[in-house]
Image (cartoon, rainbow, N blue to C red; front, side):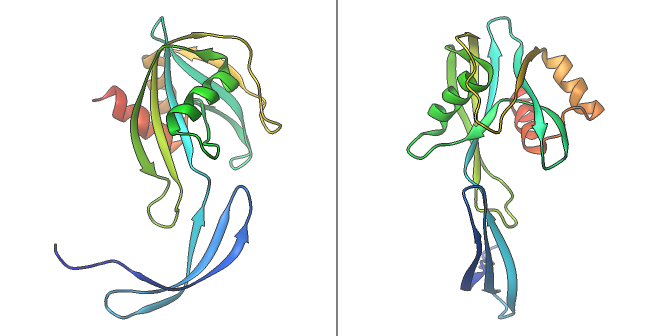
Amino acid sequence: MNKNKAWRTVASKPLLDSRWLRVNQETCELPNGKIIDDFYTLWQPDWVLILARDIEGKWIMTHQYRHGIHAESLEFPAGIIDLGETPLEAAQRELQEECAFAGGRWTFLREFPMNPDRHRGRFFVVLAEGVTANGKTKFDDTEDIDSLRLTTEEIEEKMRSGEIVHPHQIAAFLLYVRK
């Protein structure tokens, strides 16, 4: 497959530009010459997903409300990467802020596009092993998070039952535990 399949952006018009989301309407030319006048691209801030295990081998999880689904969600700790932070630094900060865990061994696992179809943001997966309770949580204004610890088997059952629904998190966890 040597054929160039890249689209060429002919024009880009910003429709929304906020802290949480940017939306552009783009005019794109396909390799066959066809023009698409209304292709929309999205950008969300880069974020980090933390697969954190404590010294007993249990996974640190969060339980919090997610407005996008209008429900509470059981997830791995995660958060937006602040300006000037590396994914590893953001992971360490987020795990402390959301769950009050720190220490251990930290490994950068992978970078993924959020959605290759139209999203320009990325998410990063970091593994933390042997973390221990440390201090207190420090939530952002939009956060009200409960932390819990689960075994691998409990997490896999909650994924099967639909209690854990975040597709990026499910994929990252299964890539790690099935390696």
